[in-house]
Amino acid sequence: MTVEAHKETLEFKAEVSQVLDLVIRSLYSNKEIFLRELVSNASDAAEKLRFEALSDDGLYEGDSALRIRVTVDRDAGTVTISDNGIGLSRNEVVETIGSIASSGTRRFIESLSGDQAKDSTLIGQFGVGFYSAYIVADKVTLVSRRAGLGAEHGVRWESDGRGSYTLETVEKAGRGTDVTLHLKEDEKEFLDSWRLRSIIGKFSDHLAIPVEMAKELYGEEAEQKKDEPPEFEQVNRGTALWMRNKSDITEEEYNDFYKHVSHDFQPPLAYAHNRVEGTNEYTALLYVPSKAPWDLFDRDQKHGVKLYVRRVFIMDEADKLMPHYLRFVKGIVDSDDLPLNVSREILQHNRKIDTIRQANTKRVLGLLETLAKDEPEKYATFWDEFGKVLKEGPAEDFANKERLAGLLRFSTTHSEGSEQRESLDAYIERMKEGQDKIYYITADSPAAARHSPHLEVFRKKGVEVLLLSDRVDEWLVSHLHEYKGKSLQSVAKGDLDLGELADKEEQEAKEKAATEHKPLLDRLKSALGGQVEDVRPSTRLVDSPACLVVGADDMSANLARVLKAVGQSAPETKPILEVNLDHLLVRRLESESDEGRFNDLASILFDQAQLAEGGQLDDPAAFVGRLNKLMLNMMMAGG
Ligand code: ADP
Ligand code: MG
Image (cartoon, rainbow, N blue to C red; front, side, top):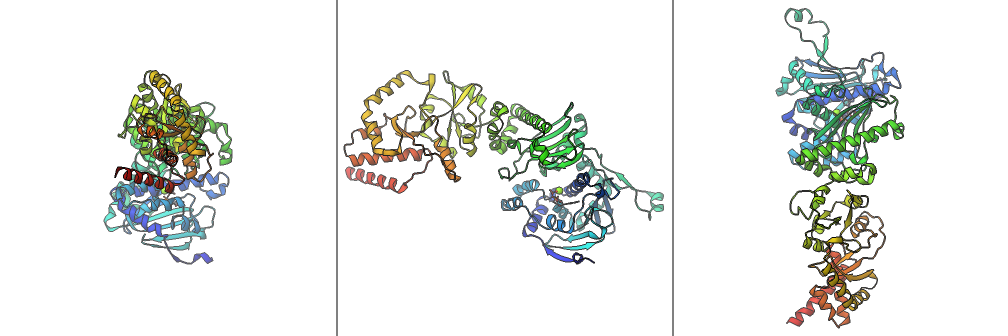
């Protein structure tokens, strides 16, 4: 006997019990999915073996006919799902079944809200597959042996799912895994083999691996053969879904396959199924999920497309099959032309893969365009879930920039106060006579964008402005300079060039005012010392006394703030203070003869302008001090 052969009792990692509880509670109304999950694992195990056997066919141990069997023992009250796939070593059992190892999973558990409805949709994304056995079983026994290890290296795992499990080394002649469910007293309906067949037909028809069950025998035949080993027959279709004709596949089958590849319990939002013939033959079946996974913005969030070569599963998360900004797409690509021994390294620089990625990208963009056009409500759902990711697109994918821009949606001053998001096309349609630019403002919150003084003149003239307040927006506008020949223009940068929109008379009046009030502007500039690049009259303002703008080629103040917030350095560019010469406060300054008070007021004007656009003051206490001094002065004057 080896050292490992002893039987030991181990505690589950804390999270396992927590997840288990949740699974049982939230999936109870959908309990037959346990079979789908276990058969799906068995199928994965068979695919893994087939893949490993490509380089070592000794792993087949002389039996390369991969299959899954579901057997029932009525007397014992058990259902067993067996596969002759890759199997698990003792260590692998501890790592995969006994614990939840990945940090992503831990964060998932932290993200649970306690709201059952919400949490149960999360469960789907998380893939608690194996534990779904406990929906119907009060004890689960798993016996497994890894392909390639000797029969004496079998392992037997058993648990009632309440905190601990036992582990024991056993003999197992055949490689692979048997999972036996000891059904709960009130779940005995699953001993009915017809019930099981119908569940398999419903959920597992699309698997390429045959799922077999014992032939049902009746009457005399049953009597005669009762001591013989059962005869098995295949109960699923056993062809990969994606190889079938589109016209033969029902929506439900597409949805079930999606659940198999994605671990998502909700149906997808849309899918595209294409077969490509020619010099680079492949099939792609791609899905857009209806919910974003909780780790969409994780640095190492995995891509969702699996790679197959001639029906053989090669790898999960084949990130070269989709651009990064479409990492939420799930599905499969099955190539007829790649070598079976393709590795991640080979994929990096493979022309066939590049072509497939480009075509996949076009397909998904096409799918989204159709959705946006024909089912705007669904598209709005998509946008809420994945919009921020799609906004990474124009920076990453130069070739599809214009198409991507057409898919973007924004809050704008047009739809203020509603949830409505606007497309650039709709914006262009509403452009004013003489308007030739698409105006936007970036800020670090929707409220800061909405209330920015920079918008005043646009509101007055009824010109729509995009309100950008996602972090990724700065990144977006630094790569998206125009759409359909119209350039995108920040309302807080450079000279405000309203083009034909500008009112000639207004303009002239402003220019006149600038000369007239030059002494005030100069005085303000010297009062603010090195803090500003310049002080000039504003054409942007209506109600506010002042605002800050940056030079046309300078980094926006918002981006500088974003960079600082994430600990990166931003170039120190000085803003320009623009003042509203029509504003009473500014007028009042002109007549201020007390130099000290003038300086205080100038500083307050400058600090206010910073605050109004969501900025932070370098010295807030000084601001408060000046303000209080001013208020006291006023009170004394008044009292
Ligand atoms: P997932 O399938 O999403 O990985 P599961 O909870 O369904 O999550 O399974 C957890 C892990 O347990 C699998 O990734 C696999 O490593 C292992 N496993 C489960 N069932 C089997 C099986 N029949 N054969 C081999 N390994 C299995
Ligand atoms: Mg699974």
